[in-house]
Image 1 (cartoon, each protein chain N blue to C red):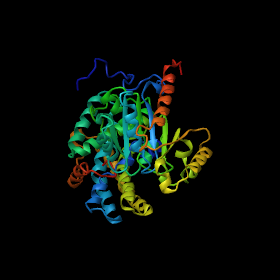
Image 2 (cartoon, chains in turn brown, green; image 1 turned 45 degrees about the vertical axis):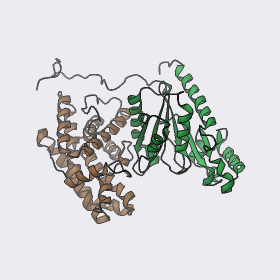
Image 3 (tube, rainbow over the protein chains, first blue to last red; image 1 turned 30 degrees about the vertical axis):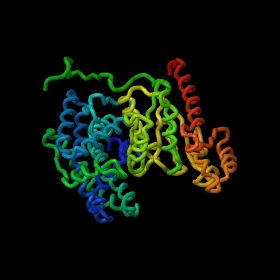
Length: 227
Length: 240
């Protein structure tokens, strides 16, 4: 491990990058009665890790890889386009950019020396995984650690929303996260490996139902979470 | 790939990041005075914001950021009340945790503050209303310059004695709905005595927005804080 303490810091749910306001699609799934208890939450988290988790982790790893490159601006622009293409729901594109903006604000203040100016995303902000990739690279995390922070974040945000939305026992929910730890680590390794490929070949796994839920959720008049 | 610059890209080199301002920040007074308005559910935060909008109409360039727990209810109320141009109101969604959005993780609120300034131009006063929470909720100094904590007499005259950071440390404590005191059996002198004991020299004001729809004394307090804020801004900032 290159920078274990910084990895813990970036992966911590208390890191001030806006994660607390997002349920990772869980709020809509709970309202649709598709997630109702610990077992269905476990399935939801596994599905999220295999889709949004893998894609986000791969793009974070790819941005990490692009960080020291001479043509980094062009590479990041390409990754931005490719990630848009993998995010079918416009509501989720906006969420990713909003979370990217929040992470960028935190990163700029906490690490003022890190260059972020060439991040794409005029209007709406840069995609969150790209910001995370640059942040991880500049903070000294290796590529797999950066991917791990991304993958881990996609499941922990939804898990903590599960505690709040369903009143589940927090010990039981954390036991679910323990069960998922191996899969989370494996996702990070897969993402770090996949990031070597050309941008158009990066993983493009998605969950159509999650996309539909996200679009519906964005129209709700009353909701607890921003997504 | 064609390089975007005419540098020899094989030579390692760096550029200063144009997105990072290398200068020390200006004194906070270079921007709008940000005043946080917090307090328990139903104590009259939104009514106070509306009253202040009326008080400062035509006087100050004003913006409002609201933090509802579930919805954009407070922002919608202010828009319907017609006390402020809707373009000057932004709502932040807080994911079940209104106190987190104003204290521990203030990015979404700072985004809203920036967006408002971008949308309507430089502002002189920004009111940031928290979602109704409990007695422990306070604003981060990274988000606001001053904070007002609003409680009401109908919540019980023991509230000031219970303390908590909002009651003890807010720059101004407002005890609202004094018109209800006789009906709920609240003793204002008890609240006054307890507030003084908790707050030392910090000011406390009794208010009935029903009787004073522009919250005159609170508005006067904000004007005073604003003049102080501007005076600090006018002092040249030496090297850090």
